[in-house]
Length: 422
Ligand code: SF4
Image (tube, rainbow, N blue to C red; front, top):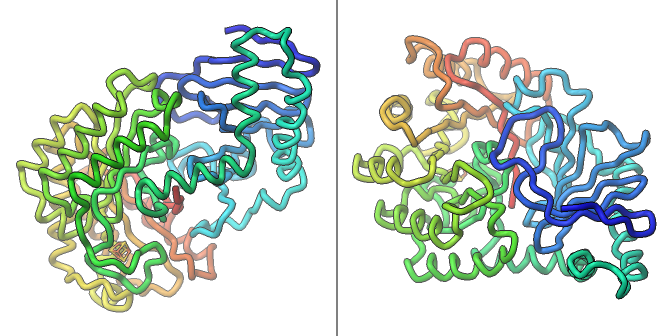
């Protein structure tokens, strides 16, 4: 790997980044990638020649430790690090992801209106145009191939590719589990179920479908097509998200089949990134119905499994108000089961979601504290609690105050859940 100077561009192909995901307060790149450095920007590309990140190098850029990242769904995310003191305590990461679409963030900062961010996105388009004039016969074949690959991936091609991803899996992923932050949201989505059990009133990400499992043929077809879709860049992934909103509700054999087929087909054993990981959402009922056979099987897969359960509240009045058809005893039993699984299974981690909203009664917050403090004899590092702000809330300061109140008392790691799509 050597930088090749081309006019004002430094081009480096197949650079090696970190081989495991880490928590860092500076930009870390993972797996293998290629880059082009101009006097103003550092552009990084995946092995398919698709733009992945942009970072400004001049004084106009908001902060040296901030960058733009493009997701496989072709959304730009701005990783904001400066100006948010204590962001790690709030999110468990050293940066605040700022999204280019509406979500449930309690921070109203929108970097996409900043002319310097807009300029960076325009600079990427301009770079592609400029490349066509510098690709000549005199340059090394490897560099020439890489530049040609980039020039084929303009904004339209990237948009169509994202549409193709959604066609393969049968629709957009409206929300990723909060635990996917541990792999910087770099997951391969694989749908094994659709719909959900409860259709709660407050939920902005639900589909209208009732809960149903995909057939084995459908899952295997997705795997085959996803393998082709990720192509040369597949070796930069080590994580799969089994969707959609309640994959834990699928039959145990279907969950295990999908996990093991994905692990094999996506080549996670040889991935450039260590520590393969499996992510799922689950409901209170699907957790309570998960028998030892399923848990034992998941515990033995070569992937560490995160299951994120939507509890929302343990207060009867709040559950009724959000139209979540569950009684408090069921929620308490499922929470107890979560604690037990986290203590008994080394390779499974169950995490919990509760809601933050500026109209919730005190009993809602009291019910969360009862679970995350009084049910535990001491502090534990496994099994995070995520507090998800309702996107209809107006008083963000009040939400943060409530969050801090719970975090101080919680005996489990406690963070804010920012909804990200794929
Ligand atoms: S919160 Fe979960 S269970 Fe309720 S509607 Fe949304 S996806 Fe379905």
